[in-house]
Length: 96
Image (spheres, rainbow, N blue to C red):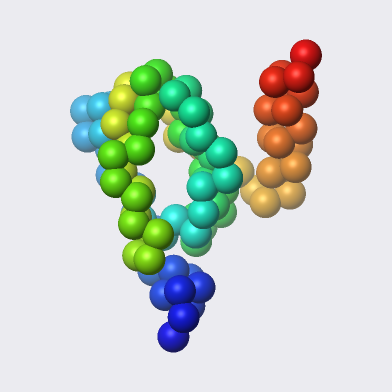
């Protein structure tokens, strides 16, 4: 069983504590992040987390666990087809 098989077999869970900490399991990869937004691929699809002063506290790439602290304003699941639209939006804002 390699790393990909291990992550694919993990359950996906999200735990938010008092809008200050979020723990996500089943994360395949983090596509982008800054102090206001995280875009990551999970075993259940893409997830966008928005907030303020966000930072990674713990990243376990082998087991697919991510812990983030900061003020959590929203958590949204996206369809994989919309990922391209999200990337276009991010880069178009960045280079305006």
